[in-house]
Length: 259
Image (cartoon, rainbow, N blue to C red; front, side, top):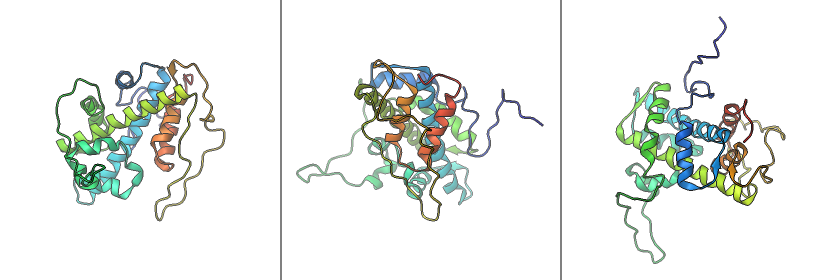
């Protein structure tokens, strides 16, 4: 029986069709960008940023789900998050969140200042200045949708970590995209490809798959789709996760202009 494109289904770790079904809405993406830059954000750019963020969070949840599955659990805990990151270094994103979460205290260790004095942990408090940490709660609905799409739930501490990582990642993506616009192109992004032990090297993209990110096209007032792609290259290691995120972002804007 032929599938009906108007009602795509989700299977396994795959979410529903990227077109209009992203758990991170364009309005949320634009709100995050407004906290970072006065630049306008084109519609394709917002869709691409939502798609990249969704891909990253899906991979993190999938890794944690696998860790929990080894103990026949369907409710994720912070321990599963640490296991996922430990097994796949590509999942180590949104690291500015680590200093605000008890989950990562053992990973980050004790921090010393220039004089060798221990820096005390940051105290949680209210802040009038918008930040990725303060605004992490905005991602709760999208994270819950992603968890449901993979057939799992999460304890509150794990959900907060996923919210925080998503918020910090998208905020960093916004900052890098704004930098690409200001500087007229991407000045820095890695080309190394990570290969996990026992896994074959990923197939590289054809040379014409993406525009040369070192030369930007477009006006200097609007963040476009290609600016998001360049920012994603900066934020993600050169492995499978980056390739999937970039491909998904292109598919999310396939029938739109590049912005």
